[in-house]
Length: 444
Image 1 (tube, rainbow, N blue to C red):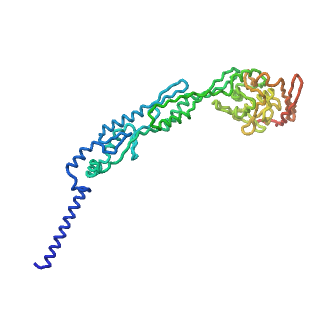
Image 2: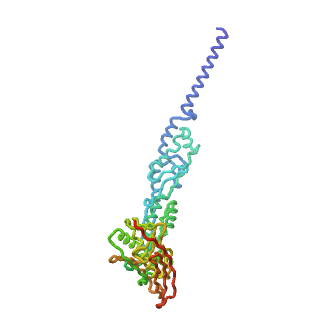
Image 3: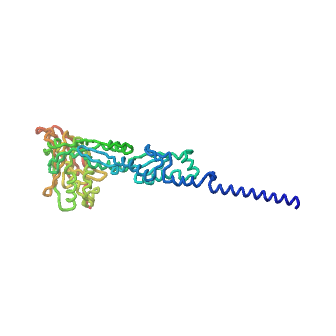
């Protein structure tokens, strides 16, 4: 055999040996990334035997869980969580005592682990499995190192968490407000001057309850929360003693109208809205605001009203008779309105210069109580007549008598109005009210 052939065979043999060694190395690497030569069946069995038990470095609320099974750990979790869910809030408001559980208050209770993982109450079994399975996905060799104390297992520390549910607390507090917050009721006079007594209101400091509840529900305090609160009394603005002296009619006026047609029905609706109004000294009312307040569910009908010098059908036609009647009644009570407007044309139910027109956005009758006593407005409809009466204390006018007076020119349709102030039968003062100029109505 030639020298060249021998060298060729030796080279092929060396290549085969190298390939065989590489194959063996790849095989062992695939079978076990660790040093497979050190893993025995006995070691694998040790790992299998320890699989139902937790590895070291696992604690919950300071209790070592090492070597415990899922069932044992689950039992520990349940008993500990039950301590917190069994807490209660004892709330006393005035003499009412109620007990509320954590469930009723919507508190969230559960387990929080140091790696950020959380399990809410009711999932203790899942939490226990999480502890027991920790490190069980590592290689056999690595787990043997842990079992022999040559390597550290993953550190997992568990604690109980308690958290307030914002929505639940807000709803609870809202229910307390509904139960204990009562608005005071002012004393009032009915339209027939019957006196209804006032009633005090109450308010509960729910903001403090809200704060204390949230602080407690966000804590892991094991003691029950005891809260004691008292409602605060709220005095009404108007008391019976303030209204009782309102018995004297200090100013009245009446006008005639047909009660059975659309205009008459409008007048009755408007009069009903005005009746019962109380004006304390300095209070101001707008007749547009009052007479057009349809919160009573009533709607005006169409009836005749002035548009410049023409009579047209408008919604609420006729209600100016209410403002006119009230205008004269207030003058007789010694109260001069802050704003008053005459109609475009003369009206049939009041003298020239004594009317008070209303037009939305244009004309209003605004009355401010300039007396030192409260006044009460009463309206009555009797036998096709509208009455407006102003009631107050007997000394409201200071012994004075107020007499509206008009100098009218019916041909020129002009009127100058005055208010004479008299005392002991003598005129002590005359107040000029207005100069009014009217147009002749041209019809429809």
